[in-house]
Image (cartoon, each protein chain N blue to C red):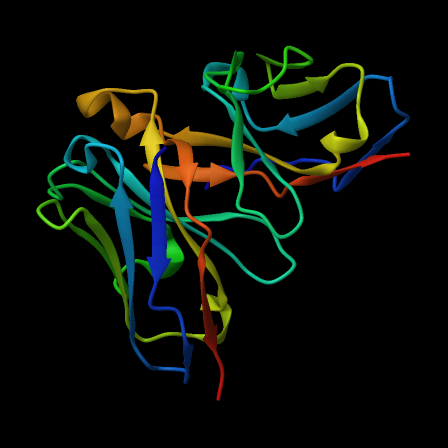
Length: 126
Length: 108
């Protein structure tokens, strides 16, 4: 079955940086759009970013635009989220998720997350 | 920006039908997806493209969408259905994914 394993979460001070990774396996990673979704403690889901199959298109929620960068390495079957200028309200469990039930460019406007990792916790605090 | 509004909580007795609403401006023109999240677990896909059930999801789960309201309906509710449920759409105008605030389903 599809496997997504996040890592890189940590305690970091406000203004600091962190890089999250997501190792994908048991599916053809290079053919799927991917997402990062986060969930602050005790709160709901918030979409963070999407990236297309070859990494040439990225979409971000407004609150992270200019601070976070989603990227991927298809040779390594890995998804990344570089987070800079971290703020207290970035504290959350960050999930990596696959976008399924679509093909090619149609996935741009679909964003159905059919598989999710277990998440990695980012805590921003002084 | 596009906003999806869900009731914070819905309660239902076992064996009855639960309806969870998701309100948004002209949401009937969008494709809606639903996720289930049980305590301590990652979210899981329940319904996609408004009415399609994800693999392993029982027929008791169904979806609809019209006007300004999308609805997830769970028939013959079981104790195991107790979870948080989230609706999701893609907003073409902003090129953003939007989640509803989530609804906690309690089985009495």
